[in-house]
Image (cartoon, rainbow, N blue to C red):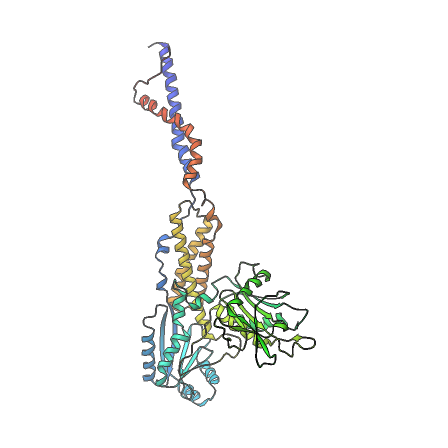
Length: 530
């Protein structure tokens, strides 16, 4: 072999090894590095647990204590209650029965006032415990059943047992409302009440369209604190509330009312159709400062009707007068409005109107109860429901609201996570960062813990867990980082990177044939020059 041929083989070998090194670096290091740096970051998620959620399996255990004068009556009422709630998917009763102690029996038969009888029961049993209710026999009743504002109900004798069962099912526990809270279809109560949230703003707006013609004397701030504040204080176990008040002057609205003659002190009234009232809400939204926070706002508005259009009376779609002591209406998930009309005497002389604060705020409290989820009880024959003695809700109403919100929040969190999991499965280039993963895992853990606490009857803790699950699921679903690569799909990614790598890959691919031949020791075809 000549010296020239030996030198040529060395150069050929060096060239082949250089090509092999370049191919090796590109394939072994370059391609994996490119693939790794362009992949969508996704933390691992508990998809199996999320897909296994079943909102129809939710049930809350609750304690029911039956106190009767004899064992036969106690057994009979327990049997009837168990039969009525046997097929309930949302309430599981843990019933205990007992004979009323002799001293309490004598006291209940001797006291004349039912509220005093409640206090006697409370001296022996804890009526302040959430999720616990007492059914107690008491002979001297003017009705078959008497339901207190506390967690106790009195019944007279065996003839009242069916009324007891109906009261428990439709008023105390409201199973139909609870079932609606965990179903996909929204019932009337769910359509009315505000959705779950971290807290609520309650804003009282006094709308005064003609301050030049009518003076309104009302301390809105004190009214909010005295009435609304006393009401929401009792619901602090459920929500955080922020109370505000404001005056809106010169906000006039054309109700397109029609003057109707009558025999009132005015000699007439102005009729406004019910279907036009909701247009007022649009006008209010333009002026009310209720969108300054992420928290939902419950609006309460008092519209001071000018003297020239007073009194304003609401008519339904059939042009029939709506019979109500207060002219007011409510908009689901928005709030309530009271149309306050001054009297003929108020519009005389200096034209000063002093609204009846107790009546107006009582109307707002009634609207606020529905907006927060406290439904009015349907009348039951043989039942006397003790009227509210103050603005505070009844104790068993608070318990039932806790159950409603617990089921609603658990169900909402589960469906949110399932929707998110489905979305992540269908769109592969959505980024799942550590914050989203932490929120989803926290929501899953809170859901499991909340369901466990619900089954054990620890209502307040179950509610807190469900609230945490709801907030965590909403946080994950609304995380802006999920949209980071949503409009940068894989075909666009390849369209950008292929023009960069293709010019490099052509010589690499073409040199692979010569490299394979060289490694096998076969001659490499060379282009000969003339």
